[in-house]
Image (cartoon, rainbow, N blue to C red; front, side):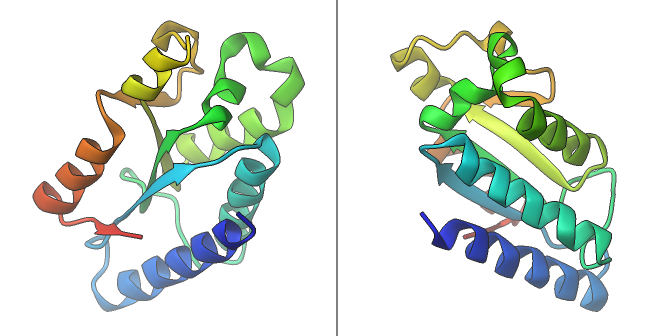
Length: 145
Protein backbone atom coordinates (compact mmCIF):
# COMPACT_ATOMS: atom_id res chain seq x y z
CA UNK A 1 0.00 0.00 0.00
CA UNK A 2 3.00 2.31 0.01
CA UNK A 3 2.28 2.94 -3.67
CA UNK A 4 -1.07 4.56 -2.90
CA UNK A 5 0.35 8.02 -2.03
CA UNK A 6 2.61 7.83 -5.08
CA UNK A 7 -0.32 6.93 -7.32
CA UNK A 8 -2.42 9.76 -5.89
CA UNK A 9 0.43 12.19 -6.47
CA UNK A 10 0.70 11.10 -10.08
CA UNK A 11 -3.04 11.36 -10.66
CA UNK A 12 -3.31 14.79 -9.08
CA UNK A 13 -0.32 15.93 -11.15
CA UNK A 14 -2.04 14.58 -14.27
CA UNK A 15 -5.18 16.41 -13.25
CA UNK A 16 -3.20 19.64 -12.98
CA UNK A 17 -1.65 19.10 -16.42
CA UNK A 18 -5.02 18.21 -17.94
CA UNK A 19 -6.54 21.36 -16.42
CA UNK A 20 -3.87 23.45 -18.11
CA UNK A 21 -4.57 21.79 -21.46
CA UNK A 22 -8.37 21.74 -21.14
CA UNK A 23 -9.60 23.62 -18.06
CA UNK A 24 -12.23 21.95 -15.87
CA UNK A 25 -12.78 19.01 -18.21
CA UNK A 26 -10.88 16.02 -16.80
CA UNK A 27 -11.70 14.16 -13.59
CA UNK A 28 -10.35 11.00 -12.00
CA UNK A 29 -11.86 8.21 -9.94
CA UNK A 30 -10.01 5.82 -7.64
CA UNK A 31 -11.24 2.52 -6.22
CA UNK A 32 -9.47 2.48 -2.87
CA UNK A 33 -9.39 -0.33 -0.35
CA UNK A 34 -7.24 0.96 2.47
CA UNK A 35 -6.52 -0.96 5.62
CA UNK A 36 -5.40 1.84 7.95
CA UNK A 37 -6.25 5.43 8.73
CA UNK A 38 -2.55 6.27 8.28
CA UNK A 39 -2.73 5.25 4.61
CA UNK A 40 -5.79 7.40 4.12
CA UNK A 41 -4.17 10.35 5.89
CA UNK A 42 -1.14 10.03 3.59
CA UNK A 43 -3.42 10.36 0.58
CA UNK A 44 -5.14 13.37 2.05
CA UNK A 45 -1.88 15.06 3.03
CA UNK A 46 -0.52 14.59 -0.49
CA UNK A 47 -3.67 16.16 -1.92
CA UNK A 48 -3.29 19.06 0.51
CA UNK A 49 0.37 19.55 -0.49
CA UNK A 50 -0.59 19.69 -4.15
CA UNK A 51 -3.33 22.21 -3.36
CA UNK A 52 -0.91 24.41 -1.41
CA UNK A 53 1.64 24.15 -4.25
CA UNK A 54 -0.99 25.20 -6.78
CA UNK A 55 -0.86 21.89 -8.67
CA UNK A 56 -4.58 21.35 -8.04
CA UNK A 57 -7.26 23.90 -7.39
CA UNK A 58 -10.45 24.31 -5.46
CA UNK A 59 -13.60 23.90 -7.45
CA UNK A 60 -17.28 23.17 -7.58
CA UNK A 61 -16.58 19.62 -8.75
CA UNK A 62 -13.66 17.66 -7.32
CA UNK A 63 -10.98 16.55 -9.74
CA UNK A 64 -10.51 13.27 -7.88
CA UNK A 65 -13.21 11.02 -6.47
CA UNK A 66 -12.26 8.33 -3.97
CA UNK A 67 -14.61 5.36 -3.84
CA UNK A 68 -13.77 3.76 -0.51
CA UNK A 69 -14.36 0.29 0.80
CA UNK A 70 -12.41 -1.60 3.37
CA UNK A 71 -11.64 -0.99 7.03
CA UNK A 72 -10.73 2.67 6.53
CA UNK A 73 -14.43 3.49 6.10
CA UNK A 74 -14.92 2.83 9.81
CA UNK A 75 -12.50 5.68 10.58
CA UNK A 76 -15.00 8.05 8.99
CA UNK A 77 -17.78 7.21 11.42
CA UNK A 78 -19.06 10.00 13.65
CA UNK A 79 -18.47 7.91 16.78
CA UNK A 80 -14.80 7.48 15.80
CA UNK A 81 -14.19 11.20 15.23
CA UNK A 82 -12.05 11.88 18.30
CA UNK A 83 -9.75 8.95 17.54
CA UNK A 84 -9.33 10.14 13.92
CA UNK A 85 -9.77 13.90 14.31
CA UNK A 86 -6.78 15.01 12.23
CA UNK A 87 -7.66 12.75 9.29
CA UNK A 88 -11.39 13.48 9.38
CA UNK A 89 -10.83 17.24 9.60
CA UNK A 90 -8.44 17.16 6.64
CA UNK A 91 -10.84 15.03 4.58
CA UNK A 92 -13.71 17.37 5.43
CA UNK A 93 -11.67 20.42 4.50
CA UNK A 94 -10.48 19.03 1.16
CA UNK A 95 -14.02 17.89 0.38
CA UNK A 96 -15.49 21.29 1.25
CA UNK A 97 -12.95 23.00 -1.01
CA UNK A 98 -13.82 20.72 -3.92
CA UNK A 99 -10.37 19.18 -4.15
CA UNK A 100 -11.57 15.62 -3.53
CA UNK A 101 -14.86 13.81 -3.25
CA UNK A 102 -15.30 10.78 -0.98
CA UNK A 103 -17.81 8.03 -1.60
CA UNK A 104 -18.30 4.87 0.45
CA UNK A 105 -19.61 1.55 -0.84
CA UNK A 106 -22.89 0.61 0.89
CA UNK A 107 -22.41 -3.04 -0.09
CA UNK A 108 -19.13 -3.18 1.86
CA UNK A 109 -20.68 -1.21 4.70
CA UNK A 110 -23.66 -3.58 4.97
CA UNK A 111 -21.40 -6.59 5.18
CA UNK A 112 -19.35 -4.98 7.95
CA UNK A 113 -22.01 -3.45 10.17
CA UNK A 114 -21.51 0.17 9.11
CA UNK A 115 -24.64 2.33 9.03
CA UNK A 116 -24.85 5.12 6.48
CA UNK A 117 -26.21 7.63 9.01
CA UNK A 118 -23.08 7.12 11.15
CA UNK A 119 -20.74 8.45 8.44
CA UNK A 120 -19.37 11.97 8.50
CA UNK A 121 -21.62 14.34 6.50
CA UNK A 122 -19.08 14.88 3.72
CA UNK A 123 -19.01 11.17 2.83
CA UNK A 124 -21.49 10.23 0.12
CA UNK A 125 -22.56 6.63 -0.25
CA UNK A 126 -23.06 4.59 -3.39
CA UNK A 127 -24.84 1.26 -3.71
CA UNK A 128 -21.82 -0.62 -5.04
CA UNK A 129 -18.36 0.87 -5.48
CA UNK A 130 -17.36 -0.88 -8.74
CA UNK A 131 -20.64 0.15 -10.38
CA UNK A 132 -20.10 3.79 -9.35
CA UNK A 133 -16.60 3.74 -10.81
CA UNK A 134 -17.93 2.36 -14.10
CA UNK A 135 -20.72 4.96 -14.10
CA UNK A 136 -18.31 7.84 -13.59
CA UNK A 137 -16.03 6.50 -16.32
CA UNK A 138 -18.85 5.89 -18.81
CA UNK A 139 -21.27 8.73 -18.16
CA UNK A 140 -18.95 11.46 -16.97
CA UNK A 141 -15.76 10.32 -18.72
CA UNK A 142 -13.70 10.11 -15.54
CA UNK A 143 -10.35 8.39 -15.90
CA UNK A 144 -9.97 5.33 -13.65
CA UNK A 145 -6.68 4.78 -11.91
